[in-house]
View (tube, rainbow, N blue to C red):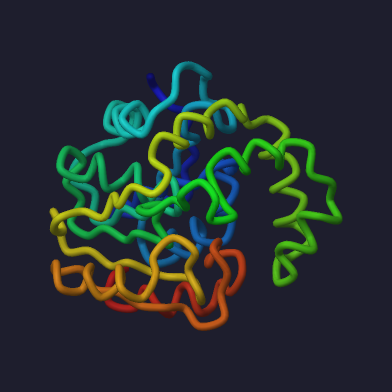
Length: 231
């Protein structure tokens, strides 16, 4: 599937951005222009079932295959958030960016009974503005507006196949390219033991203090600071 893409900038270097569940390219509204100012041409996708991309059957593998079909290989930088981090990890050996950043990646989804699971995402389809704002108290009003719109156009069926991954560790065995893992504080996806294991496997790992799961919306300045040396 050829995914819908959005571009910021006309720089000589290429950066790829892959959003998380329920979002689309608009989640990067500040990150895209910031990277463009650093000399990148920034290409962001809408994953299958999200934004302006087509609907279809869903699985981590189809998300990754779509990204490989839709994005060029050999970019200087690729960033994936949450589901986008999982997608990037499954596609990185084919995309072959020079550097990869996994922002609170979905490498360990809660097992049934642990209080959070992929099926919970589908319940957000009808979430009112007040609930989105209460869950994300540090977001700008514009980000809340965008979240409401991206959830409205999102196909909630895209979350259901992830239930088969509940309780399964999806941590990569090693980084295919030099890789940074950014973690929320705390991360409900990568706990301290898994973060330590990722370091042992060759990943650089950092925690963005005080930031929630969507780090780039919770604390944009700290998010960009954590990318020093990677962008």
